[in-house]
Length: 402
Ligand SMILES: *Cc1c(COP(=O)(O)O)cnc(C)c1O
Image (tube, rainbow, N blue to C red; front, side):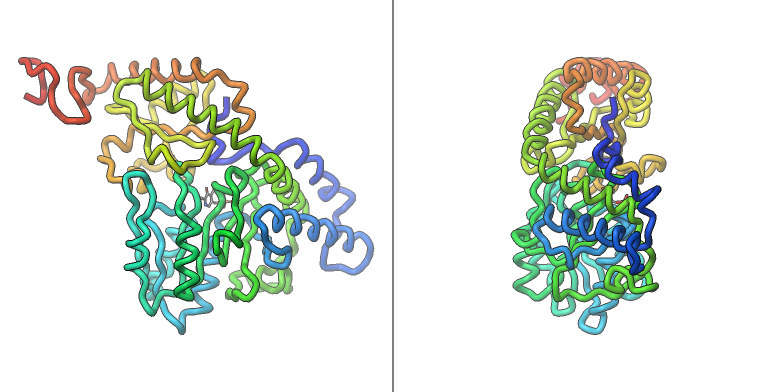
């Protein structure tokens, strides 16, 4: 059972079928004038329209890229370089994906100033903090729509309104929210929005950046003038075709999937919290993605739990795929104000619509067994302790707290 759909997803059969001809007979370069080239151009146009429709944008506002990371880079560096003369201050949050965080870190090395807004225990920023952070020098606000580790959703519409009132460009990384909840660039007051194909059952290595009409960015890849000169290089036609199809399907199925996924999610939360002692949900229970939950279990190592679950046929992760091979405590969970020791006992489960085939009871039993096995070996675990209040319930000679 694959439960790591926030890391990547399987290409759906309909998407794959749509892509196939563009690997073989439809191999034309979309920039050429003869028929086979024009066919590729037509396919690009259709994909562009499908992506645009999915976020309530116009086709000419969509630039195809190699994925979410490139889109974030293009948005942030593209605006920073364009507007550097106006100001060098950027506002973001302290739970951004590395594609945003490390891009901003790079800009700091070029003398840009970055304000990292904290999140509250629910994983959401405070609007007042944002208002206070704005200066005359602020050129860009970059806030992710939904977080890839804990699934919490930011108040994007409100942030967008504040950005607009202050004449500041607003970039949103919508890689995790797109296809799961409604993403409407007009309603949310967004200027730039990053999307990735492989998180929505499309192929890897393709994505898009929405750039609102009238917003100018400096290109990062100079070349033959493709994508209106904003992103040079012959387009990844099969990938873009697949991405377009994936967008169309995701929009058509949005409501149905939302309902299905959130009901499995809620059942999972309810059962994990009620059957496993000292289990907690990371991030608030309100305002979260329908397909993602993140728990923490006292006194265990998340990595060991992942391996036990894998042995039982369940693939989940501790945090984001990008940080799971390092031993560093997750910056996202740390930003929630959690103790680093507790952060290490985390488990991220991200569902796909097919996940309704799996038995939540059985899965929760497997987690419960695995957690209790690990706790038996854990020097940190003592079931007589009330961990939330860090005091002993028994107060006898065996109590380690007394
Ligand atoms: C996966 C992800 C990205 C990166 O997208 P790629 O297409 O893998 O480069 C960026 N932001 C978020 C929130 C993501 O989850």
